[in-house]
Image (cartoon, rainbow, N blue to C red):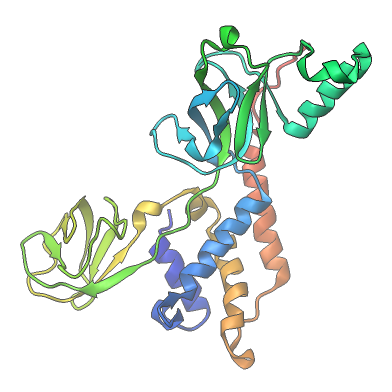
Length: 302
């Protein structure tokens, strides 16, 4: 298992530098390159490990609802939906059709034309079609808008989705402002606002001792070890951001990050990296994703 800190040091080592060398004008170019590589992966491929169950509550029978309000079913945390794979009107129900607004309008148009409905009557004509979920950008709605069938004017839609993985958070640096056994204290920081999470790693930059965050307050972090007997500079690494790409796609993240960071270096200092090794690592990642469900038993739907 690799960590984000490991990844940062590996990329920097390939380029014969330290991670700190990529911080320019307050911007961490190393972190940006790694996040760009992560987003590149997700734009190119729907990862099976990014598939989760979600719900959108208070969907209106006429106005629909927004995917920006989608919550992961297991955590109730809001997620960024990349793609809807299936939709349900109950948590344990049968999936309903999912299609774009264009497809919905085309089907409606065909039905009205087939029935030869006069133009002036088309907007109120009682057409019939299977229940389905229509997506238009970030908006979803269920058709037909039948409150009896939907159970009211608002209802919950359950979804299988591919979610976007959030970018890795930035490394936070500073200097402890006080000493409290088992804590990192910095009255100049708001650790809650900085989104420090339980599971992140704190490093004393003088002794190089490390400990894990197990409680977060505004100006204090409770740690699993007493690593600040005196005030010292520190570094907080966002290890709570660990995900499957760090486990199974680290090689591609390394090579893709190097390719991008090469533009940061002078031409005679750039790292030569083979396009073939980048492609091979990508092909291997795609094969791994395909094989996750590739060996499951096929069901004869006929």
